[in-house]
Image (cartoon, rainbow, N blue to C red; front, side, top):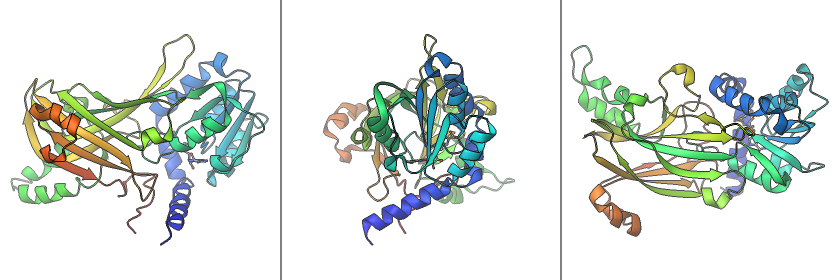
Length: 359
Ligand SMILES: C[S@@+](CC[C@H](N)C(=O)[O-])C[C@H]1O[C@@H](n2cnc3c(N)ncnc32)[C@H](O)[C@@H]1O
């Protein structure tokens, strides 16, 4: 099949998924997310007052309306999906139709009468990059942001740490006194084909989180996030069992003279602090008992799928800490102790899986 046809089909399916009100409800129900954006926009009227704003992917119009309430003089609210119609209704409902102009189109096809002072967008996917919506934000920045303009959010960091998910491994050990470890082993193989979106309790994070990458949305280029490779050299801070590598992200917003506002998707103690992104976990097919101060080294390779540019493939290599320096310089895959390849073409159970281009 013609590759272009496949891509168009994927794009249609992607925007179709955003006509589902359940998807928007999931995001709008995320009070941690909402509050971070609200505080960043509405508690900084000196940043937004009188400014022109572009909201890339306005969805229901939520962020565009906050910007208008914060005093923006003009807000261009761009939405490719049919949700644009409901955004228009919501803009009227909030009496900001004189300031917010909803435009139904892909940002890549939009023309605006002026450059803007601020770009606001909620583009983050699981492990930050899933969906690749950041590519559209980069496009918008290069075309529409004034040189001195501001990005909301402006900084993004992806973190990782060895983790333990007892629910995946322990369940089969004892079902009303019956051992089912063999079935459990089989069952776990289903988890090793795709990253798992799940909540990890902070007590089940076994080392200090380390950064996989960091970028600034004002200057990041699309090419720089096509393939990210990182050797992570963690050290366990307690005794425990490792059966996965957890990934999560933080994004930062300017807050004038005040400290940055941080939206974190890190493991949290309380369900009230949990975001809809939860954590992304690469499940290992085995468990490894570790001790405090033990080194746990791994290599992560996060590469955009050639078949569907909205998806990424994640490769994890568990490294022998003693051979770490050789591994990091030679990239000799024969040194690997263990290797998991997560094909991100597979569907997520939750929202916005995009399409599976294995079809
Ligand atoms: C994660 S949702 C955020 C919605 C809303 N801003 C909010 O915070 O609730 C992203 C939205 O961006 C839209 N979108 C994604 N890529 C786009 C593009 N290239 N042009 C226009 N809209 C886009 C999607 O259809 C979706 O409604």
